[in-house]
Structure formats: C-alpha cells, structure tokens
Length: 403
Figure 1 (cartoon, rainbow, N blue to C red):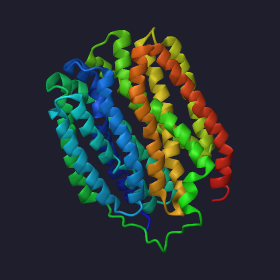
Figure 2 (figure 1 turned 60 degrees about the vertical axis):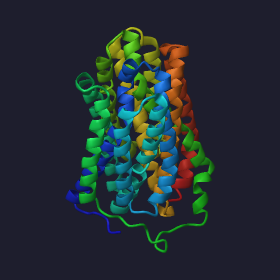
Figure 3 (figure 1 turned 180 degrees about the vertical axis):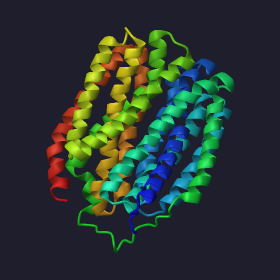
Figure 4 (figure 1 turned 30 degrees about the vertical axis):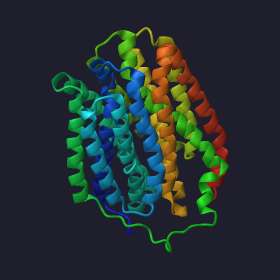
C-alpha cells in the first residue's frame, strides 16, 4: 500500500490513532482507577476486587496473540470497530454486577475486547508510514495511553463524589460509542497484505522462537509487572501509608501518566539519536527505575510527595522500556511479513507481568507491607536490566546487522 507522504496526512493519522488508543485505555483501566473507592463502597477486599483486573490482563494477553495473528490477515479498521463495540457493552454491564464473580466474568470479556486495538494499530502504522515516520508516530500514539490514564485519575474523583464509581463506567461507555462513530468515519481501510508480495524468508514462522527473542520476553514481562502493578495500586499505597481519602489518593495517580509523556519523548530521543539498540536503551531505563525504587524504599514512610514523584519516575522508566520493546522492536519484523503477530505476542508478555503484579502487589502489601513490597520492585528492575544487557549483543547481530 502507498505510504503517506505529507505532514498533514501523517499528523492526521497520528491524531486518530492516539485518540483511539486513549479511548481504549479509558475503557480498560477505569476499573483500576476506581478500585480504591470500590473497596470502600462495596466492602470487598483489594485482593478480591483485583481478580477482575488480573483476569482482564490474562484475557487481554491471550487476545493479543490471537488478534496479532488476525491483524496480519484482517482489516485493522474492522478489528478495532469490533473491539470498541465489545468494550462499550462490557463497561455498561459492570455497574449492574451483583458480586465480584460477575465482575470478573464481565471484565475478562472486556480484556479480550481490548486486544482488538493495539496489533491493528501497529499494522496500520507499518503499512502507511515509512521507517522514520513510524518511529515518530508510534511515540505520539503512545501518548494516548498516558492521556487516557490522566483523564481517568483526574475525573474519577469528581465522578465518585457526584454520581458514584458506577458513573465512571457509564461515562467510559459513552466515550466508546463516540469513538466508534469517529473511527468508522475517518479511519483508512488498510487491506490484508497480498501474500505473494510480502517477503517471507525461510524460517519466518519460527522467528519468534529464536533464543534472543524468547529472552526479550523476560524484560517485557518485568516492565509490565512494574508499570501496570504500580499504576493500579499506587493510590491505595498512598491512601494506606499517609491516611488520605479515596478522592485525594486517586488524584495522586495523575502524576504517573503526566511524567510518562516526558519519558516517551526522552526515550524516543535516546533511541533515535544516541542508542540505536533497543535492548541497550532498555537496560539504561531499567537502571533509572532501579534507582527510583531504591530511593522509594528508604523514603516511602516520610513524604507523600516524594513517594508519588519516585513512583512516577519508576513507572515512567517502565513506559520507556515498553515503548522500546513493544513499539519499536516489532518494526524489525516487517520484512518477515508478520509485524502484527510479533506485536501481539510481545504485548501479551507485558500483560502476563501485569496479571501477576496486579494480584501479587495487593497480596504482598497485605502480607509483608508496602515497604517490603517496594524492595521487590527494586529487585525486579535489576533483573530486567541484566537480561537486557545480556540480550543487547545477540539482538544487534541477528536483527540489526543482518537487516
């Protein structure tokens, strides 16, 4: 398919995809945004309610693999439309659930619905943009996740005080309907690639099983553990450590995605101008996260402001790792004709980590306390940095020098 050339065309595509990704985040992380208030309103424990978030991460991860494969064969426009319809329905059903088990079932379906979003977005960008425009655009599209998170954590306290936590889900459903209309009006219909025209070297189907790619999945899982686990439970950590109200605690979560936007820009600059190897750059960001986690371990009991800033630094670094390993790495697989599949599989690894940490952080904090839980975060960053360092040279030899 012919690439977009003019800045206006490229910027219009970036804006549409960023807004789409933003709405997908709003309709996915709203549960985590109000879970602290839900524990107060319903009387259910953190660990019980977190089952729904964990379940959605699992179905989202499984769905990423399936939808990644479909994304190389089905129109991205059609796939995203299906995902939006499903997530609107699930957001309308959550407030009607009578117990945590019903919430678990509904939110698991929502997790699968959300998997229809990202692989088609990557496929659309790779089909319509050249390599340099792809790098710039994927960063702008990634802003959508941060802006969506900001809106959830900024507006949720207002909704809780006015219409209750249920209003957050109904409001997200309305935004989903509006996005569905806009998407079908403006999205370019990228058709599946003609198999005869897509270069598929021998061994294409086994490329994901090469040792270096399998090893890369480890830091992807680890950054998912930290990024989503901390984002979900940071308001509860602040509430319990400093005895703040639900609304104020949720508002502290705004700083995390605000900081992540700056981290996206820094990571893109680092990758394009200084360190072209995504594994080396990821190791550096894991190191930054480790310093922040260690400082948080020693300062977490002293200052709410310092705790929020350090948590934002840690999650921001993990957003940078995510940008490199989930958004930039799949581009190296375009020559194999399976960029959507690779994107889906790698993104699924993120949500293996997310599922483990969303329940695990809640359970750890209840058993060993928040300070010891924070030390676990520090250990995770060290492991992530070491694996990235070990993978950097094999990655360069296999995918950069042979490209």
